[in-house]
View 1: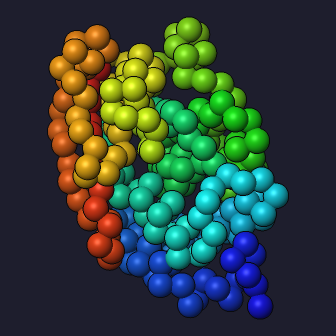
View 2: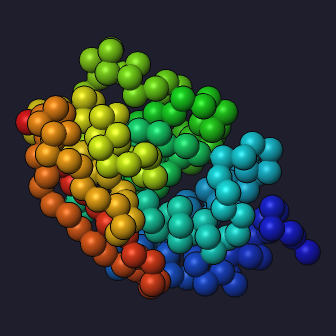
View 3: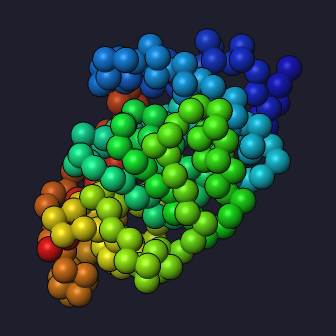
Length: 222
């Protein structure tokens, strides 16, 4: 029998987390049957990589489908059409799930190079031509003048600091989407002025099929 750090395909059919995520895909995407097969393959890759390199503390199939995949995709409708940059992407979430469901280019930015291994494997093994990665800090890309239509961050610092990392990478009129908990506060007015952004919306929601509360802060670059 596989332990917590191992994966066996037989775990998929018995996973309640996968069942919930599959229902979410069918509610949101017309090609859900194809998508769940891609995510199942990603799950196998995730456990292979995580057994060698600690890209995430999540060790169960249920957690991967709910706390990585579902949590990554729940806000997908709040992204505008165009390029996406995920700052501090860690092991690849929400970078990889967003690239799976979108035709737009999605770039993960991470300063710890080894954490990008799952993204690198996803490009080749999941054939995600729209998935990119940058072994860099956000400050490095800012200096290079990189700009994106959407810039997001999940579990990255407090709101004020996260805006400091993300806002300079957004195009004028672009969106900054911060994945937060419902206890996290919005950025201070002085931060909005400094980063030249305005708050478009605060979205509180519950992850599909769960009792997990989440909050999005959606900002627009001026």
